[in-house]
Image 1: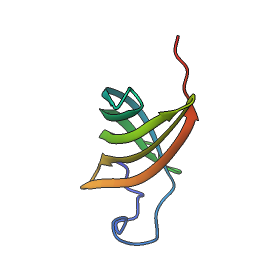
Image 2: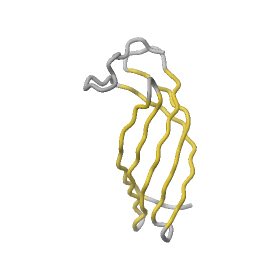
Image 3: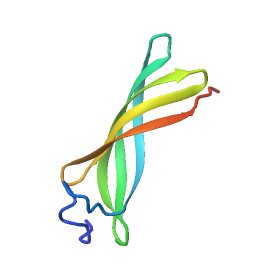
Length: 100
């Protein structure tokens, strides 16, 4: 693990610049005429603090709730990773939806 992280990371505003690269697998359940969905994802991530020479392997996961409306997909997610406890955030996403 990197030793140059702020030991007070949790619970303060001095948040270090982190880079999280993930590989996740998930399942999606569609409802209401295939317009509304719930998605669960989990996997592995490499976490690196800015300026650090090493990375930490962490578990990553998220739950997503969203809707598809006329080719546009809107969703809200609760995402996070495990390192010294659970570090998480809420996110909003919008994008185009198309099928092959």
